[in-house]
Each structure stands twice: as C-alpha cells, then as structure tokens.
Length: 135
Length: 135
DNA sequence: TGTAGGGCTTCCCATGATGGTAAGGTCAAG
DNA sequence: CTTGACCTTACCATCATGGGAAGCCCTACA
Image (tube, rainbow over all chains, first blue to last red; front, side, top):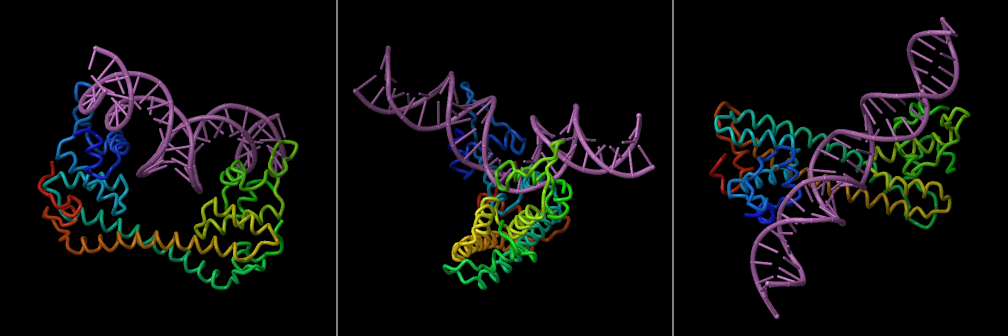
C-alpha cells in the first residue's frame, strides 16, 4: 500500500501522514527499493485511530497519549478516562466562551436596525463607553 | 504616550500593537526623535475597539472591516449587522461541532469503567469497527 | 522502445495570532 | 554616570495544515 492509498483508506492526507511520521506520532514505515513508503493494514488501523481522535478534537499531543494507551494492553481504563475527561473540560470551556460571544452578539444584532442609516449599536458597543469619535 | 502605556490602556500587548501596525490594521503612529512610537487618545480608542472586537471572536480580517465601517460615518448599519450575523453563524457552527464532540465523549466516558482494568470503550471507539489489534 | 501521466520523494513557504528572545538604543532617577 | 526600565528591530516558535517546486519512479499505451 502506497501513501496515497493509506491516505484514502484512513482519511488522513498523505501530507499529514508524512508530518505525523516526522514528529514521531507514528513509526516510519518500510520503504520500497525506490524509496516509496509502504503501509500495511495495521498501520492503516493506527492512522484511522488517529483520524478518529483528531475528529473528536484531541490535539496531536493528546492523540499520542491515547495511542500509547491503546497499544499498552495492560493500561488501566482510568488513565484513558482521565485524558478524555480533561478533554471534555477543555471543550466545555471553549463552548462556554463561544456562547458568551454569541449571546453578546445576538443582543447587539437584535438592537441594530440593519437598515440604511448609520446609527449602529454594534459599533457603539465595540467603540466602548467613550464612543465619541470615528477618527 | 509610549507603546507600553498604549498597551496598558488598551489591553493589547505592545507586541501585538506592532504586529497590527505591520499588517496594516492600524496606521503607523508618529515617532519621537529617538524613534519611539507615540500614541494619542484617538489611537488608543482604535486599539480598544480592536480589543473588544477580538474579544467577541472577530478575526483580524473581520475586525478590519468593522473598523473601516466604524470610521465611515455614512455606513449603513445593515453592513455592520451583516458582518456580525455572519460571525454569529460561524460561532454557532463551531459550537455545534464542539458539542458533537462533547456528546460523543461524554457517552464514551460514561461507558468507561475508569478503573484498573484495561477494558476501555473509549479506546474501542477510537479503534473503530475492526478493533482487533493494538500492535 | 519511447513517452505521457500520475504518484512518489524531499524541501521550503504560508497560514493566524500570539509569545519569546537577543542585541542594541534611550530615558529618567538616583 | 550608572542602573534599570523602557523602546527598537529581527528572528524563531507555536499548532496543524495546505501549497508548490524539482526531481525520481512506475505504468499504460502507441
């Protein structure tokens, strides 16, 4: 299996597969005589694991930890759960931030006429309390 | 006002103020004889506008558009509202993505014993349907 | 047998927004 | 006149990804 086929099978671009190899996330595969990377089913399986972890928002660093736990048959599931739980907390923090932004913006947009007149509460908010000038 | 004081007053680091200048988001301020940047109240006002926009999640690009609208006294509020509305949509898309991740992860974490045993539904999910090996 | 195309290789550059650091000039207070 | 805090530029790093160039390789087809 060439890198293109491994990319196809895993959903990770060839570019990123090479990158993951370069940073040590995955092991370097064997090469053909003409220096082409060759992947087998196990390696593609690892790639799909990575793809799934990335899709769930784990960073490459976190993915690396999960991969190590996956490959360590004697891990405690508590370790995995700890990584996942920490990640959930990060995501929820991020969501709360974004929701705060949306809340404010919706309020401002609601107050904005959205017509041909220049008067705009959105800009007034951005300009802050000393909203006297526009340069 | 030196850059440090402008940074203090605006909440934007001196580093970022120089960066914003380099990319043309803000105009280059006057310099003292010894080449120090000098800011006046108007320029700090612009910086605070930028800070607020960034805090609400607008990209520098979007902020630039908002800034131009702010400084164009004859803009139509509809234009501003359009930028804001588009941004709200982006944020909501992002939130939905993250919530999808959280939903999946919470389910998996719930199913995971989190004990000393190796059996772990989280890893099973990441490994996908062909979850036969761990290398 | 030659060639055209597509795939592979490496290497470098870019993104977006920010932080860090180093080497050097400047200013104010003591 | 020195010390320390500030300023200047220039470069590098982040994180994960894409783009492109230059050159090699393989296959299919005429």
